[in-house]
Each structure stands twice: as structure tokens, then as C-alpha cells.
Amino acid sequence: MKVIRNFIYNSVYQVLLLLLPIITAPYVSRVIGPKGVGTYSYTLSIVSYFVLFGTLGLTLYGNRQIAYEQNDKVLRSQTFWEIFFLRTICLLFSEIIFLFSTPFGHSSLSIFFQIQSIGLISSVLDISFYFMGMENFRVTAVRSIIFKILSVCAIFIFVRNQSDTWIYILILNLSTLFSNISLFPYLRNEISLPVWRKLHIFRPLFPSLWLFIPTIATNIYLQLNKTMLGSLKGLVQAGLFQQSDYLIKVIIGIVTSLGAVMMPRIANLYAKKNSSEIIRLLRKSFSFISFISLPATFGIMAVSHEFAPLFFGERFSEVGNIMFIESGIIFLIGWSNIVGIQYLIPTNRMKAFTLSVVSGSVFNFFLNLLLIPKYGAVGAATATLFSEFSVTFIQFCFVRRHLPIFSMLKETWKYLISSFLMFILVSFVNLSFISNVFDLLVRIVLGCIVYLTLVYCLKADVLIMLKDKIKKHRS
Image (cartoon, rainbow, N blue to C red; front, side, top):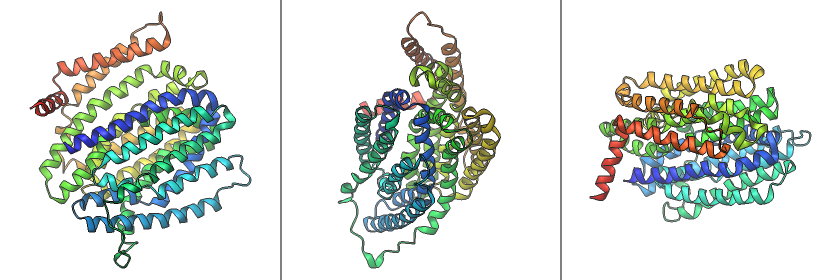
């Protein structure tokens, strides 16, 4: 029940992340325009590299290590303080490098870089790794939800035109900063005060470096598209890609919510050497994530071209083409999340995980160089799709000897056929005689009904699991 409860908390948070851009994105797109959105996206991508180098691999390491030490308050307290102080030192060093290397005085983007640098301070104060390692997702989800709602209100109040782009960026950064600060009071009964003579601040450094390599590879190619688009094709193309990428990544966040919950659980099972339970949980993960991710992929493909101009405005009509291509990464990242985040990291198979994401990053970089100059944001989306495929393929190759991977995917054909038939129906339904908004809503609802009906007729495992859970809960 703990896994289910944590999944619900994390999913509610991710659903809220989906709803908030649905509320704000149409407004922000029309108010600050493609250039304003591109300015936010490009400057954030640059600052993200400094945050990445400042945190090393300490977030993932902390999550896993706290999960190993859940039942020992003394040990986990020592681990927490060592990670917190080491990350503080690294991020302050990264902040100094950022201040000296960014051309604040001469660049037209200087004010935006200065505001985005608040993200470095926020990262110092981000202790969510502790609560995730303790499998306490309620604390992080509730606090984040409160500050996300406040940020939405602030955007509607203070962002009025394109010259307010800096206010928009400031609101988003302050929201994250205060959300991270608000977690500290919850530590009071969780950990002990640091015993200074027993602290070895640099002890987590070398273990975390094994996680840093895949972390840097993953984050660089997540931000690389926006950086290269801004540099090679201008802020407008970066803005177009940002809107597609943002919505796709929010949906991915919902799909991969289970991964954040399962990682500490599997790490704990691995510490207890319970391999049979690990395989059982991973089998369920594949079925559940395929059940969600495949219809999400085909559903976006079916409505993307109508959705983009209606949602973002006519100036963002090209986003429909970008979404159509990029939607393919939803199920690819869903599957690679199971193998990488839920299995390879908690079981300490870092070599395989590292090689897969580094390969994906290198592949993404060269594809960007080849495709972005000619195709702009559409080229970046294509590069992303092929890169994610390479990551998933490599990970599957590595785990085939340790996991019955093809057996775990045996239910996938049911979700794939149901999703494809839904895609055909939704794509060819023509309701042009009614309003565009109502047309889109009717097609989405119709697609959901068709998909769930087909999955039910095919007797997919996920419905059987849900039915068993309901029966167990009632009894």
C-alpha cells in the first residue's frame, strides 16, 4: 500500500503540473510571444548546466543512499548532512564560476541570466532527495503543489506584456526557491543534528561521481536542444520547441511517477537481496507504464496539429509538427525509466546505465548539428526521438541476461493495438461543424472511451491488477 500511496501523491503532483501549464501556457504564449518563451528556455538551458555541475550526482546518490539506511536514524542523519554540506560547497563554487563566465554587462540577456541564477540557490536548498529516499512523497508533493498554485496566480497578476518576460522568469524561480525552503521544518523529527567530528563531508564525492556521469549526460541532452536552437536558429525556434517539449515532458512526468516511487523501494529490496520481489514489481511496472504511455503517445499524435494553434495561438502553429514527432519519446522514456531508474540505479549497475545515457547524449549532439540548421525545432524533435530510442535499446541489451525483459513486455501488444486503433479513429473523425474547442474535447473523450473499451476486451493485465486491488480494499 505504501508504494500505491506514494504513487498517488506523486501522480497528483504530476497531474497538477499538467493542469497548470494548460491554465498558464495559452496566456503566456500570447502575452510574451515566441521570443519571450525562447528567452526563458534558452537562458534556463545555460543555467541548468551550472546547476548540474554543482549538484554532481548527489541527488540520485542521496535518494538511493537514504533508501538503503531508512531504518537507522543515526546513519541516515550522517548521510544527509554529508550530502547537504558537500552539495552546498559544490553549488557555491558553481555560482562563482557562473557569475564570472556569463556576460552580464554586455549581453541583452544579462537580466534574464541574473534572474535564472536564483535556480543555483534553489538547488542548494533542495532536500527532496531525503524524503524520496524515505518514501515520503506526501511532504514534497503537497508543498510543491501549494507554491505552484501561488506562482500561477502571480503570473496572471504581474505578467501583462512581452516586456514582463523577466517577471515571468522571476516568479518561476522564486516559486521553486520558497518551495525548497519550506521542506526544512519537516526534518526536525526525521534526523539528528550533525555530529561535526564524525562528519566526512567529502565521503559521498566519489560514489556520487559514478552517478554524475549519467546525470550530466541525461541533463545535457535534455537541455542541449534548447541551447543549440537558441544559438543556431534564434530564440523564436527555441520558444517553439520549448512549448512542445514542456507539455510532452509534463506528460512524461505523469508516466514516470511510478519510477520515483519504485526506485527507493527496489533499492531497499536489493539491500535485502529479495530479487524475486524486484522482478515481480518490474513486471507490473512495464504493464502499467505501457498502459498509460502508448495511448498518450498516439493520442497526442492524433490531435497535435489542431491542438497547437488553438492552445498556444496562431504564432505557435508549428508546435503541432514538433509535438507529433516528439510524442514518440513518451513510451520510450517510460520504458527506459523502468530499466534505468527502477532497476539499474537501485541495483548499482551504474556502468550499463552510464553507457546508455552517454551514448544517447553523443548521438543527440551530432543529430542536432545535422538537423537543427536545416529544420530548426522540428529537427531538434527528431534528434530527441532517435536519441531516446538509442538509450532504451542499449538498456534493454544490458538487462536481457538479468531480467526476463521480453516476458515483461508480453502485454504490450494489447496496449499498442488499442492505441493505434484509437489513433485512426480520432484522426479521421471530422466534427468541423461545431466549435474547434468542443471538437477537440469530443475527440479526446471519444479516444479515451475507445482505448479503454479495447483494452477491456483484450483482458489486459493492468485491469486485472486494478480489479484485484479494489476487491482487496473492499474486503
